[in-house]
Image (cartoon, rainbow, N blue to C red; front, side):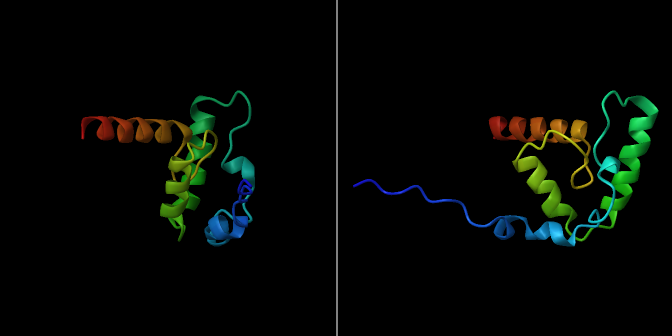
Length: 98
């Protein structure tokens, strides 16, 4: 008889840190860009999001989650999409050269 597949635990076990996020209650459009947003408008929106992240008590947990899950959109842990791409490339490069 085969073993049944075990389901993952409740999300609260893995995501409860989000309950303490400084971003709770903020408008999501501060953290996620609208279609076609570029240049100065994007930089200003990202800076507003990062200012919220700066004082966040779970900034490191949020950032690590975004990097581990390769979160493709939004500002997470004070990092933009582009900054996470660079950080992930750097991590991969460090592992390869280690």
